Image (tube, rainbow, N blue to C red; front, side, top):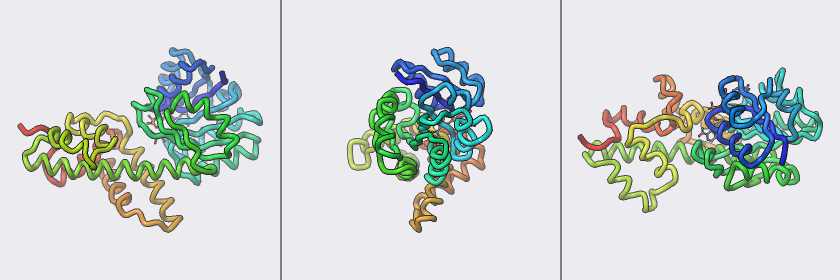
Length: 297
Ligand code: NAD
């Protein structure tokens, strides 16, 4: 069993930390929100005073933070992981960040003799709770092999997709597909609802055919029940699509659909909906149609 540090106890980090505890690992945790630390301490983890303190107590540190700036602050900034790290520590960043930011953190780690993997996840809060996340990893194969047993406590699939940064490129590809799927589902179900059909009946009719998908199964029932509790927040998906567009620009890859959905997410954030689940992308389409995805009255 390893001594593991965990930094970032949000929607995803909390259940992931719980699964590491359940597997018998010794955990030290930190978040800038003290209540989050207390919650996981009550489940058996030790409290870290800072990211540096967590690193000083651990052989492996996992970070699960919103975006690149927070990862850089928590790893490279004052009181950060590298301040407390000894040579030989393994830092696994499981946040979804820009591949370039992951490579920047990896270079700073290498200068201190610290190994680094970028290992973002898919599967959302339900996957984090069940320990069935899909984990996509970038890094050296020999470092990856060391991390696999720990990652398996949180995920059903753990795949090395290339060198550092490759985990996040894979995650961006995932996020493009999920966002465009939700937007397409929104258009389809708004059309059905405004035609007077019951969207639940339409969902049940199509879900076994070619239009069926994990996205449809997870998000259509939320839209129909008018339940937009996160889940995965609009503001985080906007951040992912922004990172995808930046990567697309630097590689000269046009991403017209991604760019369109990113504009929808920005508009929803301006309406104060940034903390809603990303299934609320449908609300953008509902507003244009002046119709909601719900059972006919
Ligand atoms: P969240 O906003 O719920 O949690 C982030 C946590 O990080 C918060 O508790 C916050 O207090 C903490 N934090 C921020 N800055 C910090 C710092 N400098 N030091 C210590 N703690 C700090 O976000 P989340 O939904 O748990 O997502 C985390 C990451 O996982 C994001 O990159 C997101 O894109 C990705 N992700 C989320 C989901 C999902 O469904 N929620 C799914 C897959 C991937």
